[in-house]
Length: 269
Image (cartoon, rainbow, N blue to C red; front, side, top):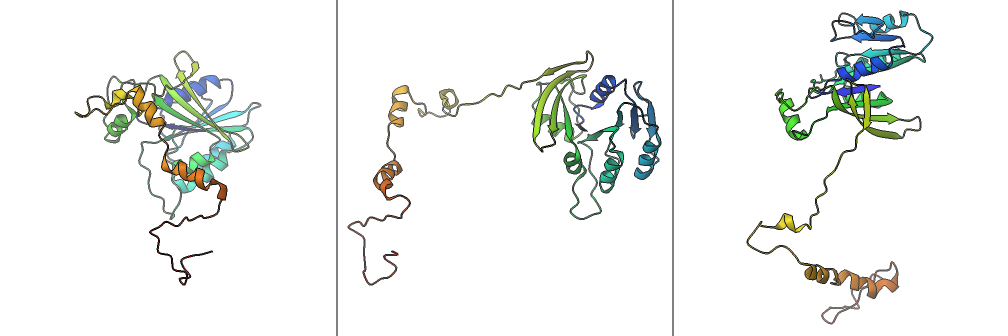
């Protein structure tokens, strides 16, 4: 399971919510950024001074439990892209479920291998479920917010990094079909709600859009609209006249055409 977060909305609340739901299971926490082990964690491993192979070996040495165990990686950004596949496949076991966080706003280093896929592309391909967390706020449009975050400007009073956030879940079935769900998560009360976004559709023929744009009258009344709909277009007449010919190419000579019987290119048939 892949969790994608950003500077606008941290994945900490989602990870804590998963830990709250799986508190009865064995939880192994692989830390690159977390100093203290969360309360729901049973095994805490500091990964800052270990290689990818050493981390995989330490996880394999942890005694298994009767129920399924959960492995949480607080940041996959510290793992080189060339080692991501080895790291993920080393963790995948029938008794383990892997939950990894990837920060989308962090710069991605270039791979030493030519034309090697980016880490986020590789992880998105491997993951069976993708969780995208976003702030649940409409006080600022997404484009403006992205531009500000790109310059590391944190807008205030717009509900960033709130315990109430929007979650987009993309679940991939074994058949390869992807199903997307949209939720509103309240991690303080542990309540999940299905969120439906309202899309405002603008009618291009709306008279209000054309009002006061110029000194000319660009709007049409009901009588003018009816007359416009009844106009028969030239290509419709051509279809009625030549429809009996099927898919053949039909050319009708006109009085001004210069037809030469000796020119082989005049009549292709």
